Length: 399
Image 1 (cartoon, one colour):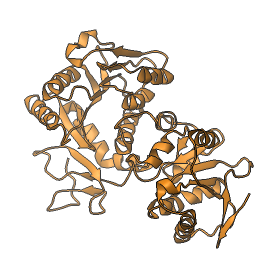
Image 2 (cartoon, rainbow, N blue to C red):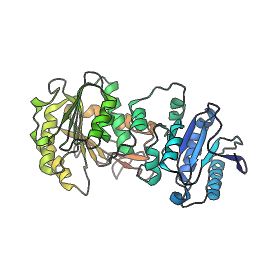
Image 3 (tube, rainbow, N blue to C red):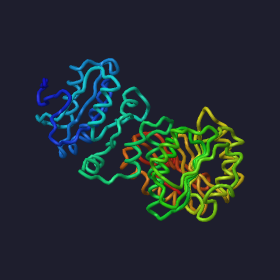
Image 4 (cartoon, rainbow, N blue to C red):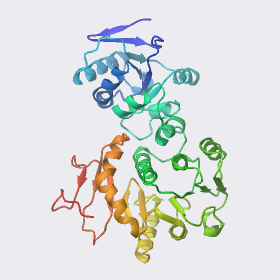
């Protein structure tokens, strides 16, 4: 094994010694040092405490940077973070790898770091194929590198289903997990409905939050055997599949349509305004106490009809549904009687829950009076603010 030393760091080639230490895989962007700096400043102290090997993937054909420069970037990032470790805990996995070689490495990994960015890149796509728990915060490191860690629904989702195709990305995943956990910890019970399933990427997260006795209903005109197989890995019973359009559905034919009703409904089916109106009517008739309806592609420039359909429905049925939150191309609706409960959660606890889940930097917006519109917005970090109120008083939150 040949080592290359750059000042205080001694880099190893793969594999590191088999001394029982956890192996953590990351493939940062080598075009700048942002992700490396984040790893060393935010995660390295916890990784070091667990004597983990940080295994950094580098492929010059993908990364456009030579190995010597990559090693210098590692040293500089560590130096900026105040790391002065001479132990051989940083491993470089360089060169081109076949699918078989990558799979072999993945099988020997205990955890992975997917980085700050949530968009798909060749690096991210490769990491998604590695079945290992994902570390996004120092708390994740301490919690998940234990000998027998307790895995949350989100941990299981990131480990087992990160590679499922779909457009369900980290900001929305963290938001869903926060809301679903908030429901469960507050004793909310009910069924789950997914209109538009495809490969099951979003349905899998909601199913992981379901409890015994709660039904999970999946509606899609084009059934996916992959989605069915994955969902059956989550639950052996309580799964229902309807191979049809939502236009044929009526509340009485759906499992669990009586009390307590449905606590989580995701509308991501036929992307026409007419279909969304029909789906909202169905969803509102099924919604149970403290339930939430999520409408996909809200404010999407590709599907403006969805935004108009949601707004028109809310205006026509103000005593049936209200929007309490929107962002990352989704609208979150509830019964008006549950509005204060959910608005208070968004104002007081959602930010901490999202940060705990390693969500990318965000801002929660409440930029108008509740009489104008009583809903929060959420999006990428704006002006360095965690919360942003009205233009004339950005520190004021009214709900």
